[in-house]
Length: 222
Length: 311
Ligand code: SF4
Ligand code: SF4
Image (cartoon, rainbow over all chains, first blue to last red; front, top):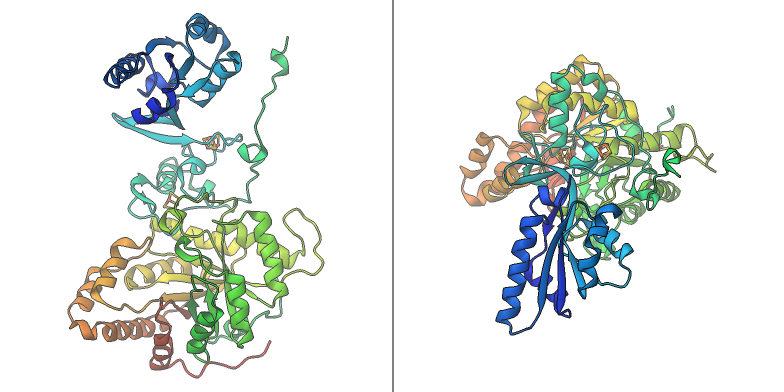
């Protein structure tokens, strides 16, 4: 999923300050799963903003709504009426959702309520970890299921750096060294040979280095 | 591969002499005198001087420039180059430039992560890794082409080095990685500082068993310990460093004023031990900000005079 984190309330308040009618728009997919922008977070944020306005003696109306996915037109349309009666939208979706709303509602200011961080998983309760950088050319078969592009701090593809120690990465003792994980799993699978051959310099053309990416599916064009 | 030695360091190693190199960090400023003063301290005591490339991700005078200053004093530099700050385009261009300025030895590294440095907010590059950099330098020299296959007008023939850290994990992969570096183009290896001699010997034994010590010249890393505090700091805070407890105790066990002398004594003992090992062809002294100690260590270790060779 796309993992995001709600912005600090002061930052949200500052962004929202110019508006008297605000829609807090949640998204029921990734950001709901990572507790950043789903129904519950929308409800909490709506009351927090209302309360804060009261304390500051400001007269504002805050409304809340959550759609299934802010990155899809079909669901975005469900928010059309609410958006129309507000001055601005505080979207709790990921960066793609925020921009999808901005694209559809050209004349309404859209504010981001979360910081979109990474493509990751819930590793354990309370801990999300980054797993994929969307590099455009997946090599998880070679690395036996663990991605060094997203999970090695130096994107090393030919083995661990000299800082790997006791399974942890040199840059953060809390973070696993991707290469220790790759090594252990490859060994367990009897596939260490994958890691012995020299890997030539990688092409980053399919990654964000090649500029904003487009995916054309001829078979879907009508 | 290039049959004729391209540098004095290569010549010395090919002759079968026990080589001595030392590290020299460029200044955090544009003052070339700092480099020259360090160079003066090393002159006559070492065969080549490694110049670090923004070591620990702290901005310093460029390695290429500092190498040229040393060269002008008659010292032979080993230019260190990391893949953290430059993409493949910049790396190739700098290699061509360095060669045109007379630099003949290169040490290829990935580099310390920028979060360790003074500007952790910087973006890193890591377009290629140290292994790819080795391969790139070798191909430029042996094939005379850049990474796109374009034929270069004069190929840079360099003596190519890499680093190895036998003390990092996973231990068994360390020898595989050494083999890969050799395959990619490494002709000499400079290792992390050796304090844990047992582990080092085990690594070397594995390398020997695979015939790797026949294919590459390994120079073992040496760093004199200065004080008990510095030792503890290195043992716990410096990435990739392995200092066993008995060594920490030894340095902490002597009066403060004698700690540095004890550190040198330990160096000399380690050098003695390393010289006996089959497959070790030299030492690399990293006396960080105490370049004045290098001469003493080399002399006491009985490694003077240094061989005189012409290339
Ligand atoms: S190789 Fe690329 S696509 Fe596959 S997990 Fe890693 S970053 Fe994602
Ligand atoms: S310690 Fe492991 S994960 Fe961290 S940079 Fe080195 S190889 Fe990559």
